[in-house]
Structure formats: structure tokens, C-alpha cells
Length: 261
Image 1 (tube, rainbow, N blue to C red):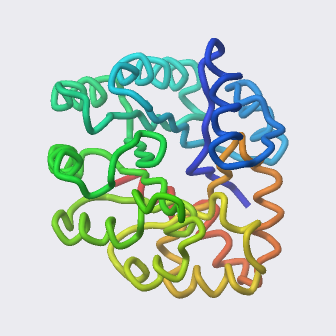
Image 2 (cartoon, rainbow, N blue to C red):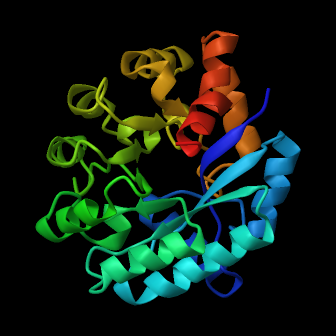
């Protein structure tokens, strides 16, 4: 069964160690993987992953251009393996020009992480940025965090009501630690979910029920590397009480359909 990993991260060599430490401290996790691109590709090969959506999020406006250049260079080096998701910080002044540059670089999506980028998902400056993005890029939102509510599902619901044409993926089954709120505000609406950093938090039966509640045709597989490897997350996905047809949609055909739009 072919696999597309729609949610993975790697970092430039010079910041890789610091980036992983920051993630460990922020989430209170022990991350065993280094966060390097070669490590991600090796882990993907071992798991039989065909393509990987590579994400990066600029935590400061000053990091935007450099981060996008690195993602574009990685994709240029591995064009048959990587799908580039760049970054724009909501407080980056010349975001319209950067969106044009990202299109020129061949990036397919934009990653937002309200907690790490220190903004509120539906604040005014962010809404202006989403309007500028429109349907040109796929948008991946980190979703859910009980400590801050910056990326609460209700906030994304407001964004979708305002801009129904956006192509949105809500990570972590719509809201890490906030799945009931995600069900209330997001499930069944015109957006996609991914399975990253969610399956280890719940029983297989619960995860399968959430996936079906939103719609199997609108869910993607994601590993959230370096938090977990693609192989580890594939084991969790295959343990869900879903049919082989449902798993194939989540692992491959749903993502392929979106990427061909």
C-alpha cells in the first residue's frame, strides 16, 4: 500500500539541535530523533513512505525568507520525495511579496503554528494573511493546546466561515487535547484532518470513531517527525479498526487527490 506522509518536519543543520530541544521543552516530550532531513528520509524509506510533506514554521518574522529558502532547496534536492510547505509569520510585513516568491519557489503549502509563532489563529492580522493566501496554497494549521487556546478549534471555525475557499488541513485530528471541541466546531466541515500526534493519545476504537465522524475521505496520514517516525505512526494507523479501503484513502489516495488539485 503506497503512503504519503502529509505532516513531517526537519530543520537546517545549524539550528537542528536547538529546534528539537525547544520542542521537547515546549511539549514536555522526549524526542529521540535528531530532526535532520537525512534522518527523516531514512525513516521514511524504512517505513515504505513514498512522498513526504516537509513543514517548517518561522517562530519570528525575521526567519521567514531563510526558512522558505531552506525548504525550497530541500525539495529541489529531492523533488520526487518532498512536497514543500513553507512559512509566513502573521507579523511579517511584506507577506504578499513573500507569498509570490513562495509560488515561484514551487512551494505547495504554508504551515502555521499559533503557539510557537505567538499569535492567535483568528486575530485580525492573521485573517488578512489568510485572505491573501486564498486557494493558492494548502494551509496546515497546528491545532489545539489546552494551555493557551491560541489554536482552539472554534477559532479555526471562524476562519473557515469567513474564508470558505481556503484549502485547510487541521493537524492532530483537528485539535491536540481538544478533540471534543474539534468534533463540535470542525468535524464534517470543508477541511481536512491529519492523524499526526493524535493516535498515541487515544484508544484505536476512539481514533477510528473520530476519523469516521469527520469523514474518511478528508483525513490524511501524518507522522509529525521528529516527534515520531513514520514507521511508528504507521503501526498505530494499521492498528485502527478501519477497513483496508479506508486505510488506503488515509495513507495515500486522499492526499494524492488534494495535491493534484
